[in-house]
Length: 294
Image (cartoon, rainbow, N blue to C red):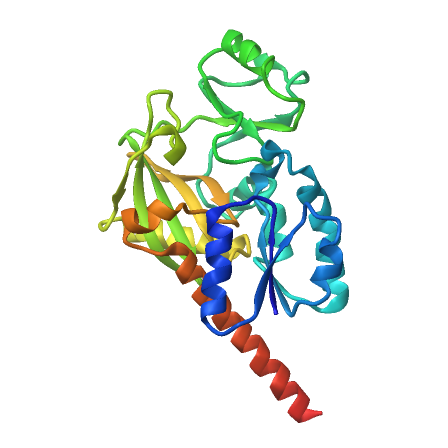
């Protein structure tokens, strides 16, 4: 049994379930918002995490709070998790993932600090800069700030959650590069346009284009970054400049809407399910081999 841990009624989670089942594998959805989640975990042979860092912005605090407990329970029971527990903690802390990539020599924005909105020293920042939740996503509470006065006004409207302030990397070519990595391969590479406020997201009106001539070095770096973060399937957002390219966000949980499949000519949930099914079959074979060797 494959248990898909989820918190949000996303089309993609149900699509992933359907696709895993299409490979002849028994699977179920386990909502971490429900009190019986821990009991249901015990009946699984493999868990797949779809707990988004943005869960708190949908009021799904329980899922983020319960995930460490689920991880400990799975470890005690010997139930593997995809992506790994380590990947989940990188998913839920931009500061943590950025620090590791920087340490390994990968270009990332400089982080000025992690703080609560009412604690920051505005004079300690360099402008323009970006502020966003340390645990967040989908551009929730994200802003590009040009000066200290604007920062003070913006912070006054932010919730009392941990925020990260970092260097603003200008997307000089007018797009963000989105890379979907599955099993150590770049499976989908897109250009996503930047909107008038400097942000880039599908729900903000950004448009996509395939990026067939994406530089090989960028592809290799994307794969290396995911391996360093122990993310077997997920996505990266990258800004290219004249000097270098910078990884500005990494996701251990990828999302797609139903219209994205036709738009991109690529079924992300189907391909992710195929990878999960392969890993599940490998696990079954190892278990069978171990039993024969007893």
